[in-house]
Image 1: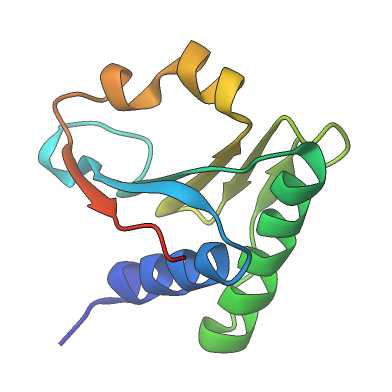
Image 2: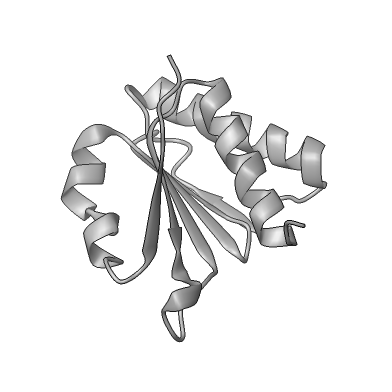
Length: 120
């Protein structure tokens, strides 16, 4: 049986896939001591509008499936990098250039990384 964190991650991924998010990666940070949350979910959008739509989709999907709301959402206005804080799960939605620049996968290289296959 899945725990609350896994159910939340599944809802986030579903919301990202509904709007054609690309390069979705789930980083399990529980294997690293003293981290800020249990999971990071990373995703790439193709334009500022898509980044914003992906974030809105995540918010709606998580709310409908789990009843949870983000504690904080940053970056919606610019649509370059949106960060959504669900306490145990942080969602990062980037434009390709910002994702490559910040390279969170490398920063959290000790985490267990799971790549989600892109849906066509």
